[in-house]
Structure formats: C-alpha cells, structure tokens
Image 1 (tube, rainbow, N blue to C red):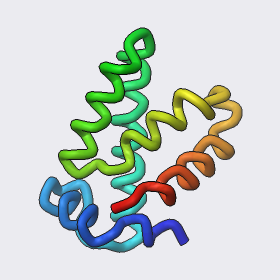
Image 2 (cartoon, rainbow, N blue to C red):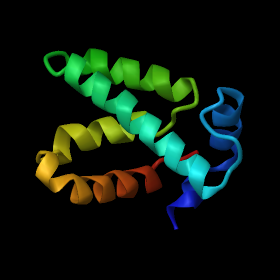
Image 3 (cartoon, rainbow, N blue to C red):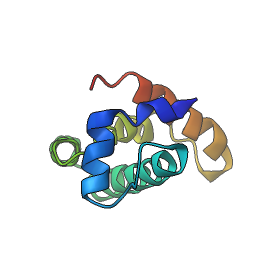
Image 4 (tube, rainbow, N blue to C red):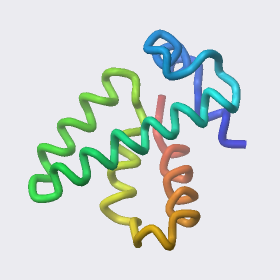
Length: 101
C-alpha cells in the first residue's frame, strides 16, 4: 500500500499543520490531495519560469510537503489531460516512492 509513504517525519509535520491526524490511510489521502493541489498550483503559475517553480516546490518541501517537487515533475512530464487522471495518479505515486526522507 502507498500509506507507507506517509513516513513518520512527514506525518509529524502534517499533523502539526493539521493536514493529517495520524499516519493512517485517510490522513495519507488528505496529504496526497493537498500535495497534488500545491504542485498543480506551482505548475500552472510558473509554466514559463520553471526555475521559480522549482524554488517554490523546494520551499513547500522544506515546510513538510516533501513530495511537492516530485509531483511537480510529474505534472511537467506525465500530465496528459483529465482523461488520463488514473494513469497520472499512479505516476505520481511512483514518483513519491523515489523521494528519500
């Protein structure tokens, strides 16, 4: 399961910011949703300036949203449109597994 991606340091930061309430699957889903929103916002706002987007993604990571840079890369490289959302979410999950915490 992908809930193991909500590692203890991530869970602690997310609980502190009230995006999660424990390290369980429902909390992981909430954190994943918020991560997607943050990465998508950066992607859309900084499509013409990817370096600025990368800097903002790293800021998000430093704030506890450690998967934002990986998901931002997924938006840049894997997004094919809303008709392919299931495949895109799977790509995002694959990318989160590659993040060293």
